[in-house]
Image (cartoon, rainbow, N blue to C red; front, side, top):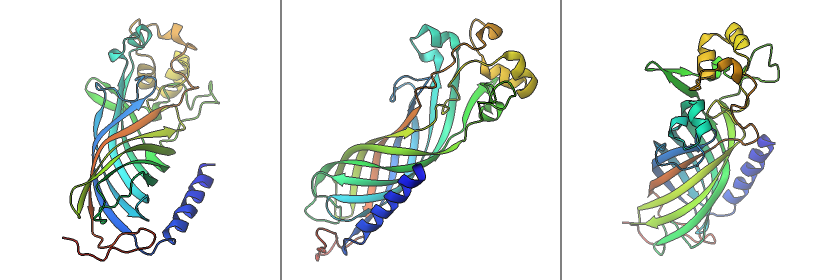
Length: 282
């Protein structure tokens, strides 16, 4: 289904691309934050858990209202049960971080006419949506050293006792969407302020989803580190926790990028009903 969606989106972009002979292009540098919502953080934006993020993008404006962009962001998401006000989470005592590489192909709609290359443009609110691909790698810390969690199978993935639990893939599709404001400074420079959520189709961004596995099975087949990172509960009753809820598999995780993008255009014309700008850019 995701491949089909990507193909349809690519065809649509191609049709738009052929619909205008006067299109302006922009390059941008994104500076902002990344955050996540899942088992170890209940809010998509939590000031205590946001992490710095950067990115670059290329934007092509079909006209004053429609544009598409290709971009890649780099950020980190994190969660920590110790920061929760929930007693169950405090006792569960799990934490993680995951570095993200997030690529997007996005279609944008400007509510007001806007292009940096257009001398009449000033600002506009806008919305966007598209398709993306991202890579994540959840890790947890022990004695000052960070360990990759996916190879450990902390919920019994890869063991004979849980054949229905396969190790999750760390490269997957996403559906990015959001909105913001575009502001023009000069005929060369502009700025975008935006927030963009990513709908994803895994509950393992934080390596937490289902139930605690049997400790002896995990120890025998996945090793001691898997046992340690599987159950770090304060009460230390790892055996009695087996088959108890560790996460919520019916609610997939999310992540988000929020920040500003500094945009620069090289174009000396802009597309508005295929009409080029004939003036000079300074």
